[in-house]
Image (cartoon, rainbow, N blue to C red; front, side, top):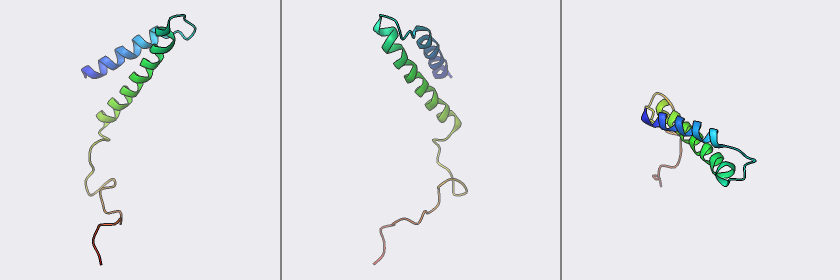
Length: 74
């Protein structure tokens, strides 16, 4: 949960400092890049929390045999 708070704080701060017409390179270049980094981090956090990284069992997902090459045969 601390990670989510850090990501949200980073999103808010980077959004606050974005000014595409500023003379400062921080406001014009780095703040938008930080916003993108924090958005990607939020997406990764949400995927990890939703459990999409977990393996599925035999009953669901792509856990079964897909009929590929198994290395055996004549």
